[in-house]
Length: 428
Ligand SMILES: [Zn+2]
Ligand SMILES: [Zn+2]
Image (cartoon, rainbow, N blue to C red):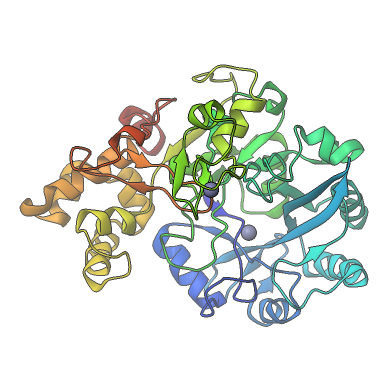
């Protein structure tokens, strides 16, 4: 059974999240997006956990069900802040758990180490190996996945507080790490360049802070499994049943390039290396992005494709395409009107983005807006140039390169593009 899963999200109890996030809203928007299995987010937070227990039922599959049968997996994210080798470390980990009773045991232990109630993504002064060892002692079925593995501040490989290898970080507990989350700013071809990640499976989730469809499910992982928690973690651990990932173009991510947000400096890794990674405006060290870090740690050339490579689809959200095409904001009524025309025609956003034919898309847009249909096709073929994100600023699609002042900076991804025929093979 094909399952589109987004297993890293947040509740309204996490910082900088939408205050309207409820289980009902998450279910509603996951269905519109085309996501079948959603992480609960924030199971460490007492108020959110109470809501989960009141609204969702355990049915023996290891997942939770809403009244109408939608499926959630118990999930949280933890921020570990500690020091190792004279360097301050800040690592975010996604945690999956098989039952409320295991969640209660995890929360029990964590509440002795610090507070759980001030943020849906709580901070602890616990090292990564200690954290993994303890959780595994609570239950072998707990899964721990380094979140957005490459981001500068909280990624296990991040330029600011990260490590050069999983072994350096997790030490004797590395054996329990089977997968990493690519994060928005990296995609599978970038990760394939490190031979030391060959045994690691790549998963992709949205880290959504709201339920809006340009956040929820913008990245996801595709499984072909029976819908049980056991099969899910088996697929994450072995790769069997893990079909591939949905990714945004990595340039779209907030940390793809190097730069300084405050100085409005955006640089490709080669350019920052030339100026010794020092900002030409404020003369302080640049925030080194994900592409640069991959380049530093890679032992293989670009374009390398490993034998067991999974499929991946590179798309940016539909709302984003419509808003840029209409030169308007993402949450304007006109954007929503067009968005829902596609949802009515194709059932879900992912159907429209990945499966709908050009002709079918044209029937929705009408003759006068056929260009929007061709943008949706270009999107799935990876042919929309993106102005790369940097230092916390999202990248954005550029539809008219001739009119763009910054055209020399545009990144057109050249690695392993998704071809129309791959999509046909996959979705029929
Ligand atoms: Zn997160
Ligand atoms: Zn600067």
